[in-house]
Length: 353
Image (cartoon, rainbow, N blue to C red):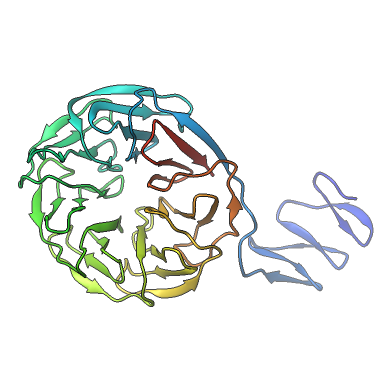
């Protein structure tokens, strides 16, 4: 059997250079994504080969109930619900420290990166009209309050622009409330009425596609609304099938977007920042409140026990892996190679691809 930098050619171990394969007794140079088939270098299509991942349960040092999370650059964040504590990890969840915030947080989200080191934590309050917003300019090491243009009791679902963007959206969980948008990395906000798609218009997913383009699903999620001007105006986009759609954007590849129909094997991808969509078949049926997430070139879908990833904007999904630790699906955050899931307890699960 051939080993090391050798390959078996006609029962003989022959040394070949990197980028070559043995094809019918000859070492042939082939391009990436090709292999030797019946004497020819053929390009291989279809599902990618299985991938590897690690999963571990982490305990938040602040204790409390963790319903939300966010990722800012390489920093994972999760606020303890109803407290002024924010847990922060700079090493993919291996170690955590607790930051004291100027006010308590009574909602579920931390925003991802806006203009590099900035992040946002919406701070609505179930019990009063106090709707201040927390903003950090140092990846969550400290935060200050930003005034909201409207007093609202329930907000959440923060999605933001990429690492070099000033655009940010805070979607309303209560469908009667306006969403907020910022074009200056969260220094100030304006309110906007995204409009209703059905009787329950709460935001169920938000995605950023770069260049001021946002995508949102509401209520049952049977359609997607799209903004091409940073959230100031919205238009309806028809999806290729009916169902509870959830949407993902890729800030590293602004024209790409992907979507899945929760609880089914129906997916879709877009090559024009969500303006139109092509239907695909998924290798599994994702479900849960948040069953898809992505960015920086990587999308993932999960049902809590299995996970699949995608590297080409939602077209071709890897065969799913069974997770060694169940992934919480109340809220999942992350992009690139690490993701954090929480379910409302004092623990979470970090998956590294």
